[in-house]
Image 1 (tube, one colour):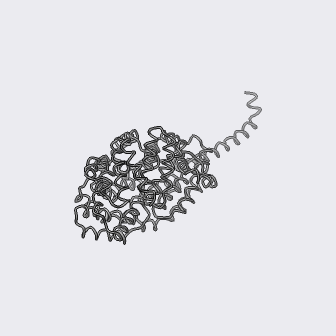
Image 2 (image 1 turned 120 degrees about the vertical axis):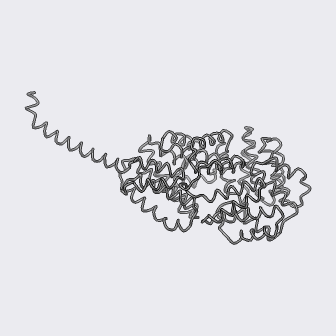
Image 3 (image 1 turned 135 degrees about the vertical axis):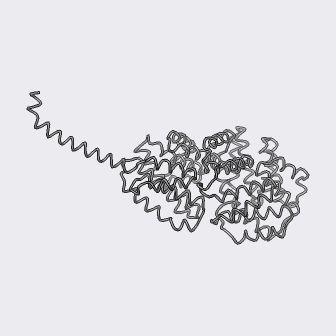
Length: 503
């Protein structure tokens, strides 16, 4: 007590200074926290936007105060990305494209002591990179990806325990890791480094975060479907993800497109049939396009035609127009309504643009058809192709069973005949039966650099990879990359590169 009294003046001075320091720290930390606040409304809105349940999300956002909250900026930006990617509307993109710079400027003014500051900037850049790729702004999109990568790497170093970083950084590491060896000097020059395995580990880490778990799970499955090899185990995981998210339209849609891409049309149809519907959800005209595709594969040409026309009535974008008119052509051509079919194929040459592979394939078919006509066997091959692509292998075999290679006169048709039979056996889990047909497709395709050679090489690579014959698998993946200027080059090359890097 005596000591306390004698030192009271010094104690008081120190106390005042300490209190001042505490108050400064308190207000600094409070300001940092207020810069990035996940209010209950923003959490629900973000969840609803991820489900494409947009009307409740918009109502929640309307009740959030307009402020400098970085989370509000992030969620607003996510909403713009979702709306633009789903609508594919050029006019809407032109109206809002300047929001990227405004939001980045606003985020830079917020506290950089929060791990959300760099993460939110990176997310905004990635959102707009995806949108710009959709609307043909590739160069600007690439710069956004590079800058997002640098922000995420910096954030990981400063806040290694901040799990959301690993969702996007993991995705980028997988994409970087799928670049072939002869192009890695470009990524190294730009400071982009990463491997597929590293990226998958980071996505698994991100799934521990409650806010990012579903998105990270979905990205992981999409990477497996579109870059790596989608396995039966992946299909079961996808099924579980759909089952656990019955009100999530985005997950149902992406599950359907994933299964369709992997030749499981019946599963894709089941996911779309079970999708949530209602006025609260964002309209998705592309679903009618997909339904038209699946019914076309099943040979239900009337139902396919109805969905394709509905897609054209509701859709506002420029992608997939050629593809839709091409499929309408098929709906009539395959039932021998050639004159009506021809009018739809004429539209392929006048509408849309050549950005997505489906439109490029439609344009190529139209060019060949109008310059050379069609052969007597072409309709049979087309029916088999459609059924095979959809995984309806019994129908596909029935179309081809009466034929042999000798029945076809054109080299391209001989190559396609063998490729279709190879893929049918592959779909039926009969790899040994598939191998000779796929090899024959390659030998017939090499002189003319036909796409069947590239796709057959990719599939043989997968077959030998499954057999653990790594050297043979590697040789076929490399062969797939050597085919030039075919309509499926982007997707084939991406998968072949990823497979080579995984070996």
